[in-house]
Length: 135
Image (cartoon, rainbow, N blue to C red; front, side):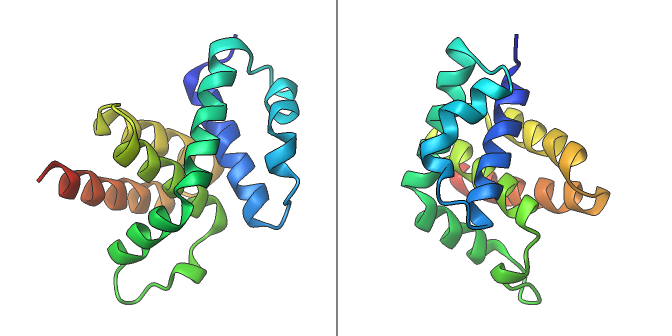
């Protein structure tokens, strides 16, 4: 049985594939999740996250851009980090999940898929966005 972390990791991988130009990922998402043994409620959870990010992608990207330091350009972001941030921002802004859980999950996924520096960067970015939402 897949965990929510595994479902989120699959969503990050699908967002990454889409960002690399795999336009078919939107049609292949069910198959992709099934291949990773993400079934039932976890499949629905992952699918809702993936669709949610896609539905709000422009808004999410603008929020990420607004929180980048002046030295960073959105186009220079590592694509895995970008996918993790997109999912994290979506969950913070558009779901009822506690932001601490979202940030923890994002950091755990970054540990699996990205670098040590990325975990700190993702943690800091999502924390700023979450605290701004709380105001």
